[in-house]
Image 1 (tube, rainbow, N blue to C red):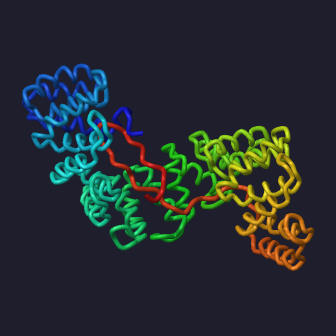
Image 2 (cartoon, rainbow, N blue to C red; image 1 turned 90 degrees about the vertical axis):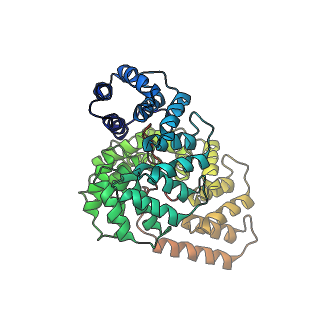
Image 3 (tube, rainbow, N blue to C red; image 1 turned 90 degrees about the horizontal axis):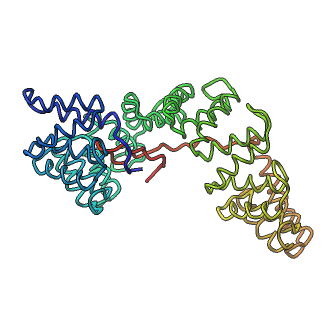
Length: 452
């Protein structure tokens, strides 16, 4: 969230650097820096306030910083904006960048993306890497300015060349997708790798994903697992999920169901729906954990409650079959319908069966055919065979042995062409990005979503 979280290491270093920028003879700045490192924020506030009142731009920036984070004083965005503006009007690039952020986020002032762009540009023109990255992001998203990927690339590059990790990720993502620049997985990999070396978790994840796909670099599952592990240790749930999958299938690491379950649990505890589904499947099958259908149902339900269609389908199956819960046709119908509404073929087939048998719903062959057909046209073998039976028996449709034969043959072909049955959810191939605008005044988690 872009809310009121405390500043991180980069932010702390920025404030300390701003205090050190004062002349060596200015003891109050040195004393404020020392107090800040002691986390004696009240003393920092006491030392900076008179300097700020005298027009010292670095002290004004520092005062705004403390108000924005509620350090040494009550958190007050209005006061933060007031002091950032005073410093920004004197040309202080840090203050200009943070004033821009306040406008972009609507903190202490009405949200105004155009005004944010104006202040980011002032700081970016002073070679402020964070502002350059954020200005690039504004152009990439079309926030406060007409969207222009080529201009976004230009600003990202300026910041990336200064070693700004977010900008390296964002520029890499532009190369990865061919936005504003000719697509080049090799360039994308090089940029992600530079940011990953700085500990940037999204970059680590993306480096791993490129190794896994063999794009921009020779495919190497072991290297992929190594970089997923780096990101997983930073509590990044998508990396934890992928690492669990690699242990489950022995890709780049020795096959180990227990380790797979451990990493799935780490990601599941952070709300990753794919990990919740795969952990549930391991409990259902007793892989890497003791068999426990009630525990399986618990994890399926957590993912289903987040709207994940695969989990909703499996919750429906559990109610349908009475696994881990008492059989309940009405609940099975409710969960199948949720997943079916999202186009889940298995759930559509399940709904068709409930209508065909009159379980949990009024028996209705025409409705059964309708749901079977939706699933069959997606290539669901069970639905194709069931639709064949409905044509053969003349249930819900006119009897048609030729049409029945056609659907039976399609079902057989689907089964022959199918890969070995796999009960878990696989690794997504896409990279993650871009990194959202950052600020010196707050930690902002990188988004876990994919393309814009």
